[in-house]
Structures are given as C-alpha cells and as structure tokens.
Image (tube, rainbow, N blue to C red; front, side):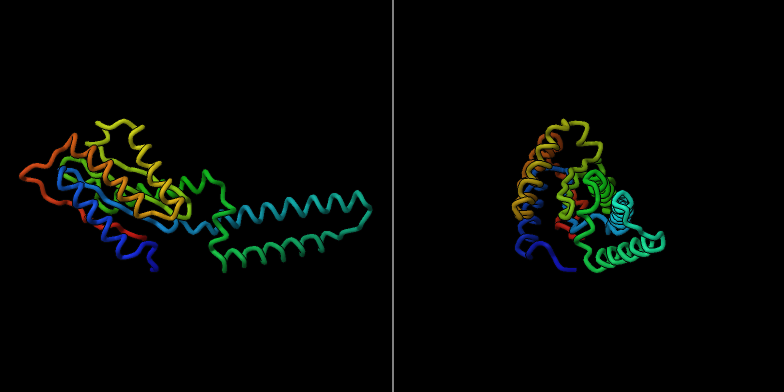
Length: 211
C-alpha cells in the first residue's frame, strides 16, 4: 500500500504520542484511512437511477415533439449507457465517492472509526482511557473516539475542537501537523484527569496506522 505520509511524518507523530503519554496514564492511538469504503454499489445505484430518470424524461419530450421512439430502442440505449457508466466506475474508483451523498460518506467513515476503535483494542485499556484520533481522507472526515473513562470527564465541545483541528490541517494537506496538534491537546486532557503513575505501562502502540 502506498503511504499517504512520509516516514518523517510517521516518526513525528510517534514522538508526539510518546511525549503526550509521558505525562498521563491514558493512551492515544492514531489511524488515517485513505477511504472508508469502495462506494461501487451506492455509486452504481445513483448512476443507474439518474440514467433511467433522464432517459424517461427524454422519451417524454420526444413524444411531445411527435418523434417516434420504439420501446426496444429506449431500453437498449438505457442498458448501453448503464453498462458504460458501470465500466467507468469499475476502472476509475476515485469517481465513485463524488456520486454518493455526503451523509452516506460520513456514515461509512464513522463506522470505520468505530471499527478501528474496537479492532485496535483501544477499548481494552485498564482504566478505559484510550482515545482514537481518526482521519478518513477521501471523505474529508475526522473523529475522536474516546473510551468511557476519559469521555465522562470531557465535554463534547472539547472533542469537537480537536476534530476541527484535524480537518482544518487535512484540508491543507498537512495531515501530520493535524495529528501532532490534536495529540498535544488530547495529551493535556488526559494528563489533567489521569496523570502518569509509577505503575503505568504502555498498553497501545505509539505509531500512526495507515489503512
């Protein structure tokens, strides 16, 4: 898989996580996804629906203008157009997401964030103080998923500001900067409520994961 960030970016994010966790017993985990779904089927549905609606509108106008259009010709034209559109979607995956409603894109990205939170065992820390910083690039979506221990002590508006930092930097193509800033903010929150102890152990990897 081609990385979206350089080795230097990875090292910088890992160092930021290590520095933040040096002052807290909490855990910070970072995941960046190139995309959260393939979007072929929802894009295919939208394209097919659009082609059918437009073709029926054209057939209606032709009928008003007394232009004869045989049903077989209409159906053949629809099928050929749909097949061509599906071929474009198959060979050019980057086109698909632009045909999917924004709400659906965000739902896929949110589902992916929750999947990563569970798959990476962020919910398994001893004090339930794991925090996931998640960015999905294709959807231009970011989310903070905090476990029960820390989430009970931090207002949602605070997490929203961290998300704003991640998305603002990602829009500028500075994903690593967004992560390092967000890590600093989350690290301070964790240190305030869960300061480091002599018995503290590092329960999660410190590096950023690209999927």
